[in-house]
Length: 96
Image (cartoon, rainbow, N blue to C red):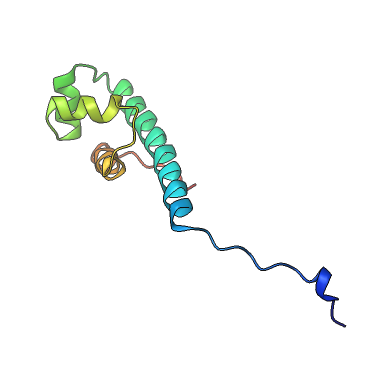
């Protein structure tokens, strides 16, 4: 038995490339927040608070480490750098 044409299920609309980029950026922003929180928690647990100590723990210059952990805007490559810093500290995030 087939449905009449006016009751046929509609085809799923394709997502535009702009919408895919927007969704990916939103996902990256959420990942950045989770990574920053996890890294901050580990640093606090280890009593690492001075910029030089944070930089040494993350394996990057102090200015770069400070910018990476305090920046609120999304930047290209920030997720990858945060993931590398988290791996260096042994931080693992549960899969979303």
